[in-house]
Length: 359
Image (cartoon, rainbow, N blue to C red; front, top):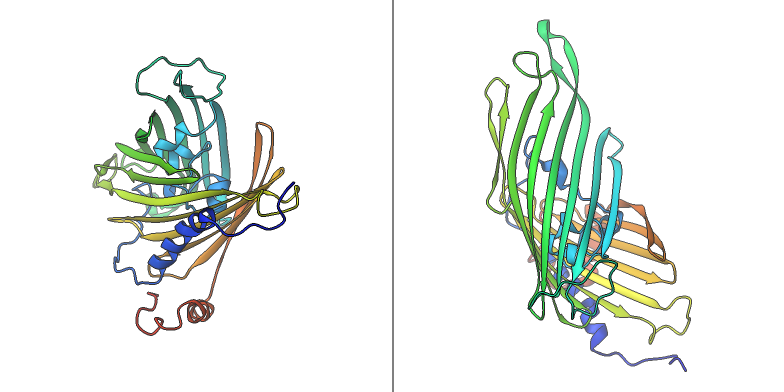
């Protein structure tokens, strides 16, 4: 018989641990003054991909278990299904900033891993699984450049990245993932000789995931680990842009709600996540996310606090039927400074005057 009531236990504490850590970071000013690099150093490709991840505020480095895993944490490709393919396309802010994402991969489980897979098992010592993924990220928009005589010429500017990712899962130790990626930019007919201007560069991402306790996952990732130089050709000065290293670290906890909710229809799972993203040449951000999954649907919410700006919230939903998953695009809303201060006074009445927020 299902229990109608259950006493709080350690699972509840762990469930909110990632959120509590994120709130602690949110309570203090962020001192770095860096801002995201402009077009020409792949800044637009950092906008985020995957409706599920975006609905949870991008607090995904410790979750990363679907087709967007290679983007958020290379180690996450080992957590996805044995064979998967997914993607999305959206126009950011409705301004003609078109973003595309497509990723596919496969995982070969170890013989003693206990995982069910459509692929053959590998008889490799000390390896629970071996995963591979290929990913395409693309951005395109129409800009105008000055032509002969000062006339304006429309140009279809584009940024692209092709990523190849490998992940290895070890018993007890966790999963390690490595990505090699090629950046390719193009500005047709914008070169000094009337031909195309272009740029390219090659970089690396590194990710790690570990599950120390049942339901609890810790994740960390480094992007453009060594700094990626992007060299322009056929432009007046042929500059070199640099994609600076950036990092993310976080935790996620998933709790089964079957023992806490009497209704079979509403019983399911609750996942909470917290994450801090930072690095030179990028905007530091604290992220928090929630996902409630029951029956065939999922509801998601998130909060993001970039440095030197207000907190904004995200939300999304998803439907899953067997192996087919559909995630609805999330949305975001920003709180005013006055409303944020009101929330601060509610949660931190003794510290508002001392710490404050950076605006």
